[in-house]
Image 1: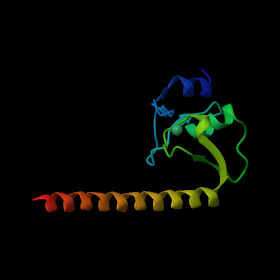
Image 2 (image 1 turned 90 degrees about the vertical axis):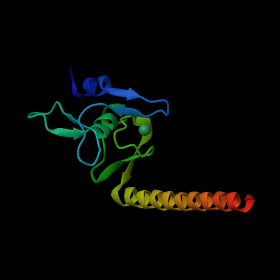
Image 3 (image 1 turned 90 degrees about the horizontal axis):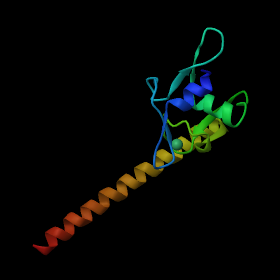
Length: 119
Ligand SMILES: [Zn+2]
């Protein structure tokens, strides 16, 4: 089996559209797979998926998971971006998560407040 065949054989499509890699992952949670290159070095599954499905990854560019799932291998969820853009997007997402967390806290607080008011 080629590297690409092994990749597709071990992804599990999810209802949300992500193709979740069932094989090995590195400590950051990214899927890794042995390549067909001499010595079979490990490569990220999202990079293999991108290259066999879409095309070469330009030097200096990195693959952004639009779905934010590090073990997702669905090429439709990837975009080739610069490292700076990837970092900028991560910061935007973190800020949004913090904001949503805060809104949720406020929401819970208002529920508790309402419940107390009823008594
Ligand atoms: Zn995905």
